[in-house]
Amino acid sequence: MVVGICVGETNLNEVTFISDKMPQVGQYVTIEYDDKKVLGMVENLVRGNDALNVDINDFKAIQKISKIGVEDNYIRGKVKILGDVNDNLKLPRTPVLPGTEIHHADAEMLNEIFKVKNPIKLGTLVNQGEVDVNVDANPILSRHLAILAMTGAGKSNTVSVLIDQLLSYHVPVFVFDMHGEYKGAEFPNGNVNVIRPKINPKYMSFNEIKKLVNIPSNGYIQERHFRRAFKEAKNRIEDGVAHENNFLKLMYDILEADSEVEGSDKQIVDVMNKIDDSMDRYSNLFDQYVGNILTSIKKAHVNVLDLSQVDESVASVLVSHILRNSLQRSKRAAHSGNRDELLENSVFYILEEAHILAPNKRDSDSKRWIQRVAREGRKFGLGLCLVSQSPKTVDHDALSQMNNMIILRLVEPEDQRHVQSASESLSQDLINQLPSLNVGEAIVLGLMTKVPTLVKIDKFQGRSHGDDMDIISFFKDSVEKEAEEIERQEDELMDMGYDY
Image (tube, rainbow, N blue to C red):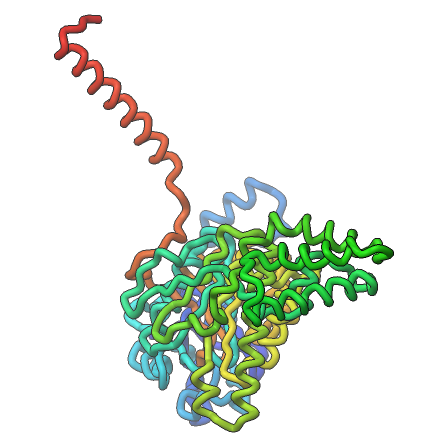
């Protein structure tokens, strides 16, 4: 089927065409010339009428022209060149000849293009529902992924579909679950392993705890006292001398004993006050009886760290602690030369609310370790997926390391600009399509797919909790239940002989 005819000047990246029937944005087309069969995607469409140009200001004249000038209507579009179908989608070396026909790409050819070695089925083409969209699992795990969307665009469903597909390969998935969406989820291809947000202090670094207690970086005397108490508390727990489950309280007691010595430094009391301020917020974080969180990770499971009951500062500590330990463990395995051990430590981390954990204009420990895993993780078998409904507030450095993107509906221009600046393969024409995407539709691009794709994401077949609450139905049902209960009580009173 002829979609249009190439017109004007053409180049190696795109062609302009005129059509007599309306194609669809995101539709794949083929152009045959110079013994090549080139695949392209319709990225831009406009309708116009030469007789009804914007310079005409007379309303009655426009009415008359519109009645007799229908034949002057035209459809003009732009096709992005994706590559030669017969040469592994390599970009052609010569431009299309003007006047060349553009044809609709058939489903059989597209199914071949979406065949990959380790397929993850995300959904189907928006414009051709009979064509399944499969992306390659390995580039997702090794080159990272970002899932970005405005609230209500289908982000949680997309994450659930991705998790379930990865579970079919027995990949250990680890979700930093900020809102408790996944701890009660059910996945057809695997089970959920809920991990408590607890840390054994002996696995924590001094800097992690120091930041919790807010010891300033230039407070050298306070840091010296705090370090002494930290080491002493660790030694007591490891030697079995202390059985105090509240690590901060143990440090406080050590410093309190020091402060009672005649002539002691008054800054010890300042450190004690800071520890005391932190105990209410962080005492539940520590548990000397739990092992290293990394040993709790199970293969073929979605390992969910439930952060819904902790504040952002605790979440930041947990994220930085886990990513730091994971990267260091994988580096040790790599340096030992044991490839099997390195692969054994591989984990795919999914960070919900990435704009909180890796903020763009604010420093945090979690942001620093997210950046490091984003830069170095692929060399050590660690994958990263940043999920956010506020892309503009996600750290640009971390986002630019995501070599794959699933972008659902984005309306805010600043969000769009931030995402485009972090992705080399996201053209302005594709950016312009983001506000018009329907719920569950996404632009998929990056190393995981051979060509940029407009996808209708599959509906997750398991059970999750990412949907909006049905508040209206709740209150409506509650009033109806109250009325039924009142009626039941009145009937009971009538049966007992009471009359109103």
